Image (cartoon, rainbow, N blue to C red; front, side):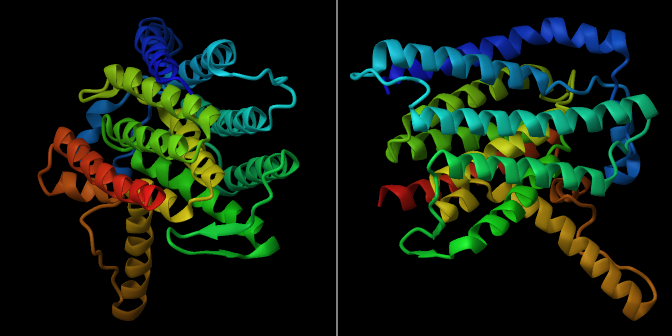
Length: 342
């Protein structure tokens, strides 16, 4: 893949997302698609963000899809040495299936956001409704990848790997559910989820390039550019939120690219910020229930979860949280990249 095509794809997605906000935000304001804030899910001062337009994830969704399509056309015109029909290019079709999978999760998030806005509350789809839709989307994508020739059931753990046969598919459904919802939980501070995902996609670009998965680098660079363009509107103080529309799309993107590489330990390291965010919630809830049953009152390990709220309650500014978490994600991700290089 010529380097200039990836750069152009990233720039195009950035421009679409950054300039698209000028049209999208007034439209969201006009429709009164403001985010309902429930202070139980965050620090009390987050109530000031009540009414900030949500569904801003549409910016990087459109940007990444359009830029990926343009990049593929340029790749076929200037990057391919031999002609291959688009309908027989298995890698390109697998990337397309990933893109459609991510879009399907974005649609699930959109339904959830729309329900919240319509009800004027912070609860949209019921948890079981959301899980069922996510499971269906995950199964469809794994089936599509299998049909397109990706039948590797090996778990890659850096310097070792082992084949778990048919058990691979139900396990990966659980991985997809965990990661997509972990990314959703990370979206709680202005600019956090977008910045962490920007870093993750840049590292995934290097991973895919090293593995010679050239078509995938088009999407990872497009999404990185789209996230950067979205941050123009989402850094503190945020002028719009990505909503579940955006976070579900990003979560599916992290899961899809990570699983497509079959470098599972690398995927864990690249996605470590998200994983720890969700893990902090699980630890908090489990410990609270245990202490309530044993001592008659629930106790907490963290001041508030997900863990970015713990740092916020400890005096970290939103900017400091974004920088700290992104640097941590970059270091962990680069360790994952080393596993692929070595």
